[in-house]
Image (cartoon, rainbow, N blue to C red; front, side):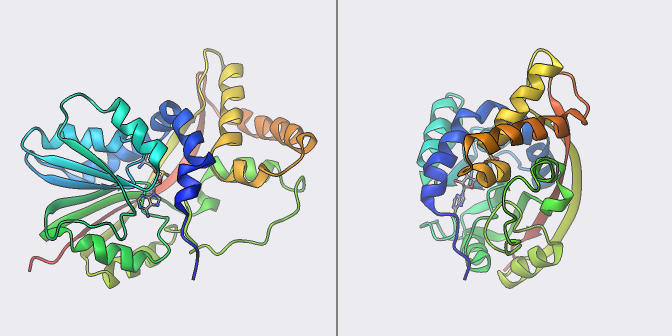
Length: 285
Ligand SMILES: C[S@@+](CC[C@H](N)C(=O)[O-])C[C@H]1O[C@@H](n2cnc3c(N)ncnc32)[C@H](O)[C@@H]1O
């Protein structure tokens, strides 16, 4: 069975890079989270579980919707990201955060109106078991709504930089597309299979495409430099180049910058992103 992303991945260097790039990452992911939030339609007074909440942007948005009579619990395996979430949480928001694996955390039974996630559900070793566990925390008739990436080949923000460094590093054998990782929910049929097996009904998986503002700067040149720096710190390119010598990394930076320069954008480089917006229900009884 595939290894889940380990706590150490998200609490170690990866988590640290997410924390130091939190503002930029939130700007990049915002439109996708907003679309998932619209699909989730949280209402005042509802109780929500935010799965893999990271630094908390989606938890804050959910808390604003459910208001003081509602509550949001953000669960994540990354200590540094949760620390960041607690630090930047709006004062007085109806929120709590818990350091736990959402797929096996001690969750209250039939307690939540909504399970939500912005890109936090693709890392379970056994997604069917994890979703079965989380569904039991939903009230009968409760809702699930999340956004996840479609396949890597559909997402230019990974296809472009990875294409640019082709031939510079030894070809890695294609990884199992179902192994835990950002693109493990790329296949619509697989999402439907997992959720049906986990006991959800009324499953809908809809494509959502949008530009992602990569990097930022006061000029296009500064934005391009920032976009390259970011791709070297977070995501598939950073992992592919992590153990490469400085000479290769320097060549790769030039090639990735050239690839990004083909994309429009003045204060950020606009790169196509392709996601699924997924909704489902817990059976009414
Ligand atoms: C791509 S990040 C998204 C973070 C956040 N939702 C956002 O949109 O900014 C994935 C998040 O899922 C968390 N995660 C991964 N596996 C998890 C698990 N089994 N249980 C809870 N959180 C998990 C990671 O620590 C990380 O914060």
